[in-house]
Length: 635
Picture 1: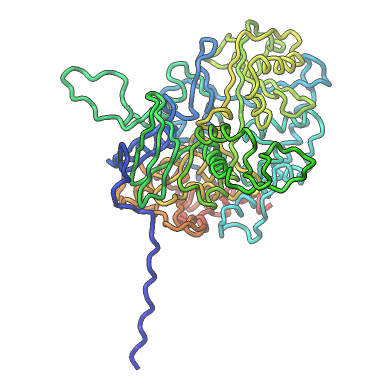
Picture 2: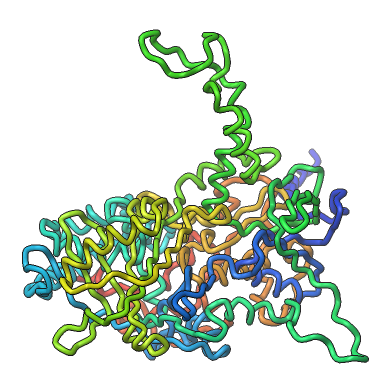
């Protein structure tokens, strides 16, 4: 008999690569970048270096996204990003040999800053009496810190399991809330001081209570890579947005006019005041977007072979609502008892649309981003698990410096209230170098308290805040000025930064990033470990651009970009296996191309950090992380 035929070669799975022409539109480019925050500007800068034409479309009148400053009481304040978290490199044998890249940008731009002293704290509560600090706060704080250390081995095991990593222990425990993890270690807050300590340590960072935040979500990846030192930006010249401008300086238009006789610069790819109202991602190849030009009051279309959407999860979640509202009138009317008046149309077989609300629904649809067709279920499912954090900053200016205690100026003044999170943390700006003698206090709210406050008038906020402040300092005077950040009410963001709920897997961000046809997604929310951080947005812009360039067949090393051989063009068909297969770890050492192959950094070396040669996939590339607390496993 003839020899058997060899098995057929597997048909390679199709990717999202597209080499055709962009869809018809008023203006076209190879790549559209939607949103000019740090992720979008980073992506644009890398495409510019790769000599790929693009358009950067931004709905506001300036770049920066949630890196935005404002003038208050004659000083510049930062409404959004304000800290460089974990700024500097460690000095251990096996630690990262580089700083947080945001810190490098701060140093390069010369922004003034102050190192936050989180130990400079004074606490008050009602039981101690007005103006009398809580005496035993250090004892209670010690109990809390013990519980945090106690839960770290369990936190690491759950974090590791969430990575889908084979390097983790055999048992793969599910995620639990921080509240449950702290309770297992003996921390059960039962006094206002306990809740205030907890708020200062967790809500102040994650903007959610421990009942909502999971142990995997709160794993301190950033602070394991770099030193636990935060620097507060106080620059009065350019402000924090200077780091975004520095990233995009290669393509952003320069302010000074060109000298006479010098050729004018090429047309700018930046399109400001262009609010994206519609994204078409199933047009036979490429992406087309509809934009409302707020300056001209007209709608314009743009298209590209590819698009990178960097919008916040808040904006994307509102698009899900718009998709439901669009079909509102076609949904069947629910069966209700006649005894109740639901204010629906009288026809029992009529639509679900409540009487008199059709115009409100249409108006809401018109104000919200829409996708055509709507986002697939796998994308909307992951969006639902990534809520925006509500984080409100309230600055108050006073004529007198009444909060000095025994000639000592503490940086953080904490109020322990019977109602958890009631104007709990007040930051003293008088200790900051650019705000000396300005008599400014910054009080922060988080979670539902923040969302509620942002819907109040300034006068109402002053009344409630001063009710707390006068319990701390009976001689507190009325503020002469106030400024409130209201990110939850901003239609370009609908929140301060992304967060993860309990039970969310680490690769949730990678699913969000995964493209739909030629529509890519990026932004800090797509970062597996650094979501909510500014460096997470920087890494996301790099990572997404690398994948897109891989789809364009670009495999050479682009200046200042991650080597493209680390990336694959994503497959056209979505599956979790495809997400994990095309995802490559892009932690800081990838961006800086610095590896530590020191043989002394073995698994048994408890002094070592996280750098060692590693594989590329999510499934088997985490041994460098599991070593961080290796000694905790052993103990």
